[in-house]
Image 1 (cartoon, rainbow, N blue to C red):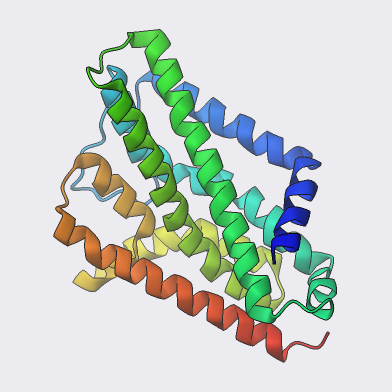
Image 2: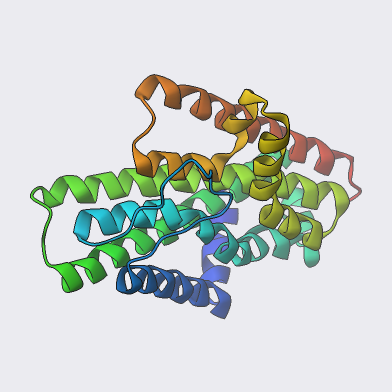
Length: 251
């Protein structure tokens, strides 16, 4: 499994799209701070979009707007997992002795690592740009950095839930397009379904909307727990489902 992840690192570092993703993330962060605007995917109309008029508010606006990153990260999905199935290279890993679940889990870990890395780059770019524009208006700068680190990990895990579902679709249907389209429309479908049915439990599946709610500080620790549980359960089921589907495929 470690060998597969190392192979992914080598391949990604020799892929122009990997660095293009990083540049796109940084450009998006800089534009937000300069224009002092924010927005997102599947925004709850009851939430106010924060504006970045100083260092701290720029970070809050960046958190609120971070759901847009999922569209930039579709390229990562293609490079990490889509490549294996478009080129049918996954067969080499499986015939080399790697179990189905180990293969799927290794790909999932790679997704989490690179998603977290680019999200961290996004927030650090926001902080540097806001620092240059507004100066250090944050009394406890170290706590801000620690908050950003926590958010990068948390948001990386949240996006990885959507990616794990897209991976299961990709493996099941053998179509990279279906998996990519799912990533695009998933947050919108959840938001539309929630507004039409008003089924309260659906909000726990709105993983990207959850990030926006975090930015507004509207949730208590007890209210966050159901989101964490649902995210973990969905991820585990998606990984197990992907492994079962691969098991039925001919090598």
